[in-house]
Length: 132
Image 1 (tube, one colour):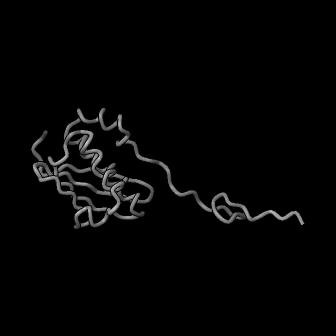
Image 2 (cartoon, one colour):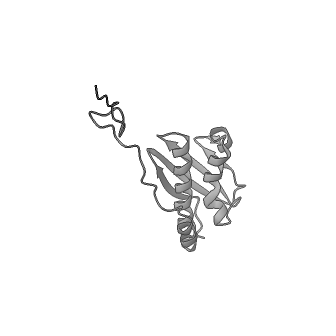
Image 3 (tube, rainbow, N blue to C red):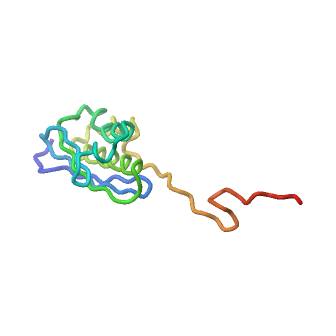
C-alpha cells in the first residue's frame, strides 16, 4: 500500500455518480454528502450494498470512506458508492482486483430506465385495445 492521503474512485449506477475517497487508517466511518451513511440509507439492504466491497476484501474498519453522490435515488446511490469504493480499493492494492471482480463489484451495471415511445403510454405499455 502506497503512502497517500487518500485513494480515489468514481462509481456510477443508473443516473447516480459517486466520487469516493478512501482514507487509510481510519475507524471505518462512512460519510456520504457530509452525513453518516445511516442517515441516508435506513434500509439494511442499502447499507449492505455499500459495505460489500470492504467486507469481501476484509478491509472493513481499515479505511474511512468519504463520498459525494449526485443524481438518481437511494438504490442508485448505494450502487454508485459501492462501485466507487471497489475502484478505490483497486488503487490501494492491485491484488484485490480478482476478488472484487469475482463478486461483480468492478462491473458498471448498465441497466438504465428505458425511454418512452410515441404511441405508447410508457416505454412498452400500449393503450388498451378495443375490438368494437
